[in-house]
Amino acid sequence: MTARWNGRAVLLERTRALRNISSGGLYFSLAQAPANSFPENAELEISFPLHEPTFGATRLYARCRARVVRRDAPHGVAAAFEEVEFVREERPTRLPVPLPA
Image 1 (cartoon, rainbow, N blue to C red):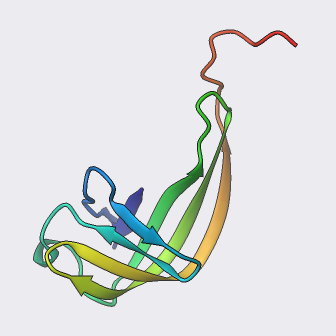
Image 2 (tube, one colour):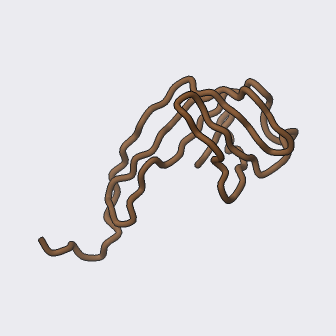
């Protein structure tokens, strides 16, 4: 998962940054204290993978615009989705040779 505010990357917790997600928004954890990040009601750009198969050539992810609605001490952030776009990205297969048919 990646998050950006004002064009700058937001530092997220290294493991399990995304804590909860629903159709209306998400809850995630920051790597640093809120005073060093962004204000409440900030608009964020968030991207996260939806499907990334081990050997597949297609990655599916969500790119969202969300507004911060709550800050929990010390690192929790709740944001409501304002716009969600699903993006399909083709990339080279990770297999060195094609599988036989």
